[in-house]
Image 1 (spheres, rainbow, N blue to C red):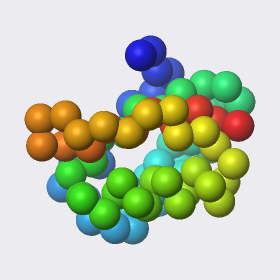
Image 2 (image 1 turned 90 degrees about the vertical axis):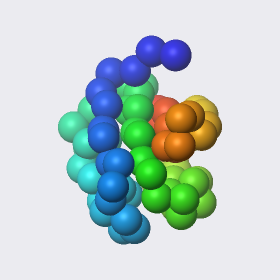
Image 3 (image 1 turned 60 degrees about the horizontal axis):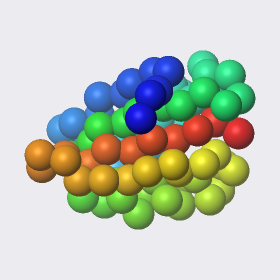
Length: 75
């Protein structure tokens, strides 16, 4: 899946992955995709809630090699 920007949030705990994602998404145009890689297990529910609250689309959420990858499309 292609993306326009990537955020490495590995090693960060809540709420830092969400705060950094919010900042990264604000720099994107509508329709662009942000890929986030995080290691905090709580980030799975955090990013679901974040997308529900902001109206951005959580395109995918997967665990890959011990990390969690999220693809979020800016609304």
